[in-house]
Length: 544
Image (cartoon, rainbow, N blue to C red; front, side):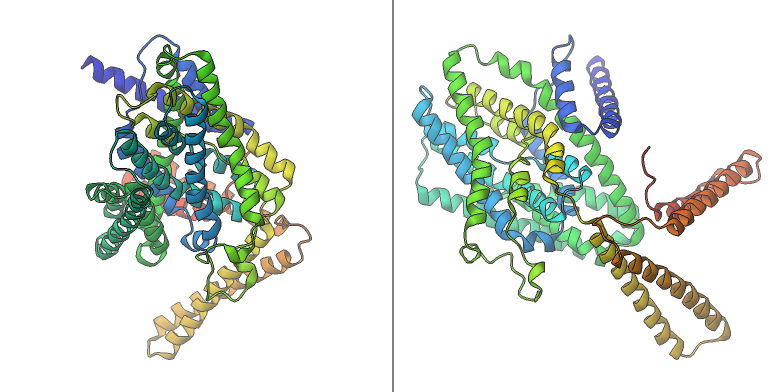
């Protein structure tokens, strides 16, 4: 009982720290991930219990929901459009990083083997996009770079874990050849894709059960674990299965999920993602004392050489890789990313500019997957303790160093999304959807119906026409915009202010009715939910 209470106290304290750090991050602009890692280091040296990362728990319970939610929020179409660069970063760069770290260890680290170096390289190769995306979005990172960071982060873990498995097998003296390694990689990746596709198909077949928001939430929460377990049971990539399932289900959600289910599921996943990410970055910092305690048998020179090799490859290979691959003729790339149905050249993948490549070079923050991967190395693995330390330092250097400087770098490079173009595209889509609704009303009007239905059709038509006129006025304003920022309309801002004031007044009156006993709490909750949905449609208030 005493241990249970201590654990509960730790969990509550961790949640409190995550909330405080988010509050501090929102007001200072500093990345929450880096701050949480530093807080974790500080906590690790305080008296009291510490938590050592259990890699199996991380890979089984934390990684699937984090990857699944990231996949749900990603665009399958955009990732496919940029597939050449995504595959280059998530497969080619991970393999190159693993081999170069392995070669460096075998050549210059005393007593180290190629297999040990490749295992370390595989562990530190995959960036964790959470910190980079959080900072980049605040800085207004263009959508094409957001897609690349998302796509790379979704697929590189599977590559890294497969290489790590091959390296561990080679170190144990198992039958290892280049052909076997390629075969293991291809089988693991293909099997992961199939497993993820099967789970996504099963979720689609369960569509009749997803009309109820609570049932839809339960299915959504179970999906990443089902995909991961199915793949791991047949010894293929569980990580890739989770990602593929998430991408397909996220792509299908607008077609198969109800509006109420989407709203509730989205809110649940945002909360889970917020808490899990916060706890993960805290855990990274807390591992420092345990990692340092393992280094007593190594000479300082050996540790220094190992760190120089690992950090050098991680920090220098990425910009070099981006520069070389972007300079290659486009015909030398795989054509997986090209959409044959898309006749507009500007909708196809474009080569990155020098500024974009610079930003992508610095978007390589490492995270908990690197620590979890290197901690899976079995007892007796060559130089296991040294590999733990090198991976931990890489995570800290990139998470804190790159995390704190990525936002200023993006702003210094002058990279920002074209907000006017984004607003224009959305308003065009809104106008098209309202026009489709008006066309449907015309079809209904041609059918036989009574006077009451005539009146309902006329009212709805008037509302839609008013909305269409508003969208077209907004489009006219956007077409005249001379910058890439959304122009402010005094009429639009005034309308928002009035709508918020009206909603606040309604909410206050309902509370007065409840407090006076004229409205019961159940009725209040129903009416409040109506106002909440109306308020949710309004743009978020600007933070002061």
